[in-house]
Length: 288
Image (tube, rainbow, N blue to C red; front, side, top):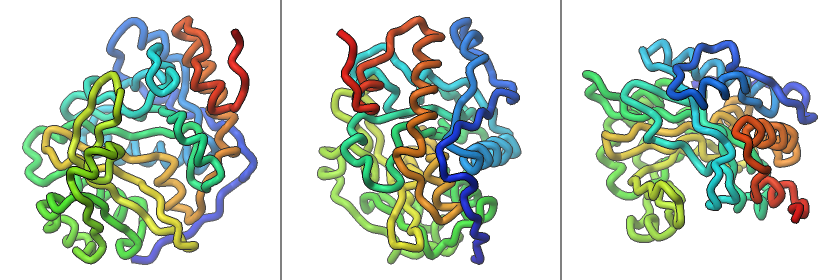
């Protein structure tokens, strides 16, 4: 499949405010207050991808709902949201969750690693849909976004073979699947086989597989994590998908401004102090 290549506009970091004009479903008074705070992305291309994702899933009848806060108020991950909160996403609903992982600061020199990222999370497809989530994801990645099917890689346990019929429908062959041991994947707990981060306050335990995309320079970036259990849908990295779409990785420094602003806004609206993770990612001394 031919893929249109675009050039990133303005590689200097700048924040683009989006999603504020979308009518989010409100779940609580606190979330009604936070509805005034808009997500910030690193540049216009990421904003465009988020917009396209929202339109795509709304076109299939899914409802966009309010995400959880970036600043969590608990110690895990330096007080920053590590991932999506599946308990907030109902059947036929999705959200775009801002997240940050303190451990990534050690990998900041590797292109594609960002201090702030967003996960589009869809809970359970629900309803009368008989095909698994991968069918919807590949329709998005290949038909809507225009990625090349032969540049996709799949990483998971041999249980991913249950989804092989749907993978083949989109031109993905078994030779593009890299198999990992289930026990080893569970010990690691980072996805691409099993997602079970140690010490996570919500104790997620999900068998998953990941979708990676190969950039022209050979670098692979993970763009999606698919649940093998039908009770969980998938997560798509908005920034990572943008990198694949434009054949160019973003850098840590490009996203620092949007990270700083997003954390400050989340802390302010909840009347919380700036968390430890804020200072660790910015490599600043935390005030006593």
